[in-house]
Length: 484
Image (spheres, rainbow, N blue to C red):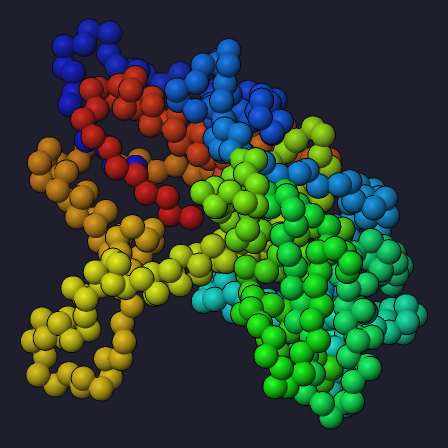
């Protein structure tokens, strides 16, 4: 934190920060996370209330945007999964420690991403899931290639014993009993297991030499702001498509084929994007976010309704509610994968918007040719410039955003003079506000949502102590940045 302050020299009582240090009798404590949102029932700390609400009638915007986000709570997971998430025996501990591996063994789709291991290699703490570049979910043919074992969705077309043997062979470090329990649970409850088998049965009716594909399309349902369970006769629409057919196809459809077609990227706009991969976090395969979701109680015919953003959907799902048993918040390292996945999906959508709206942000002012000419380099090869896509300063973390923040800080320093205080703050995972709210058997590593929320409130408290209460003197201006 950078702070510029004006010192009050005639304060005979001395400012709090200038007195001899004494260990405080009571340390700063945010209290318990026990204040309910009157709209959705999510639990909050009092310090998370909106600034224009009172402590006697707090209103929160983090969970449901003051009642504008209306989503149904998730059903309790099947008892077999609930037991593995809660039990303290060896099998339960192994499952929770390797839940991301168990999820990978049963996922319908694969994860295409380049993982950054640099932090895990130089730090001895709990592993961190960090990625580079884009993240995609991919789906493959329903039948494996010749001389290749079945993987992912292909295993759902084998009988239970054969599929279990393949999974045990491909995941030799996992408990076979746990794999059997999870397989039986998903075959019974995960709706896409039956939908994929139905698609497979349809494809078997056609000649293998025909270029036939099935497009899996999930309609939002009549209540477009709530979750719906996908069922083959209601929401999931399976459309056989033969080569040359004029049937309209959406780019968001999931295309299923027997052997041809290779791997395809699953659109993050598809309602099945989340439940097809995170099968253990959503064992009933509730539809994820899709563009038809709206705020409030808008109906399908309301064309003026505002869309529910993916950020609002994810934040709503990450809340703690007394009447909701969240397998998501008990996901451990798989929860980390989910949060990184959702952040990457949101960020990629923003980048795509900037790419498709270069005229809107007047990107022509930053054309590659003009930038090259401004450098005064006569040896620039214009054929190597290519097409540039400009990120405006509103894109957080982009080069123009960082440059603008730096210039703002330097302008403040030039105007007010030399900086007086440079302060750094580090999050402590053992803060009581975090440890008190952990579920049984969890560590702060398992709940990055709690760590982030407590950090934000602690940061605000320190700024208030310095800027509003003036423990160093009358503060003129401050600037801060969050590094990691």
